[in-house]
Image (cartoon, rainbow, N blue to C red; front, side, top):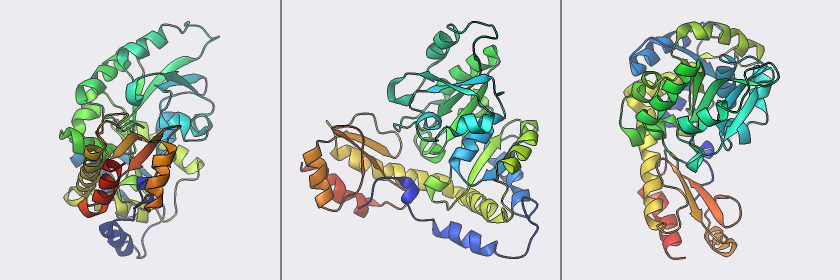
Length: 333
């Protein structure tokens, strides 16, 4: 009955078991046997050598990744409604030492190379103006839209030509991949992404996120930044164990598919009300205050999204039996 956030979903049983299995004496911080396996496990997933740092929040993953690419006097190009702008309480500026977020518009919170070029064209190349050093995109976006490999590659090519870093906020990367059906490499490093914040907490994890560096040398300084930021947990093995459990038998992708499938059922019942295409596990619909009250009176929980709209989010644990009542209730409005 609760559809306000996938952050509120339960921890997957296999993840809980992995945490329990890690509850033994081992080396502290990131020297334990689980943390030491992360680079190899993620390198296999992404088909190239990568370096992986666990952190406990998506905000830390995003901002530590961005701090690897920008100096305090530089800028980060992102959508005006990107998570790093609207939901991280100024953390990008805090972690980077003051780097500026440079905003773009775009349908469904997606940005295009043309929009980036137009923005860059307005910046004088002198010390009086902030110079862009990186671009950050979200896949899936804050409105549940998915960047295709060719769209990321177009941005990647622009970033390469302009000597900009490319960061991907993948808080819902599993949901994006479930939609795309391609290799994870195709929409990340092969398309020009330098750093990926690979989200797990929204996908059945407890408190673990992966910061993936496709150039392992970039991770060297990030290890110091993680410590300085207070994210080098003394018992980091419990985070590493979660990440490894998700990679085993593609649990991360299975969970993403389950959440997407649940969202598609609700979307099917909300035709004519949809504000954005449903490409992941978020559904944005037109809903009057009276209609929202009617749904809540039946026990359904969700976010109001401005006047006359609502956001519904499905999670890995939602099955047909869980979402059919909401779908039927929306159809009956």
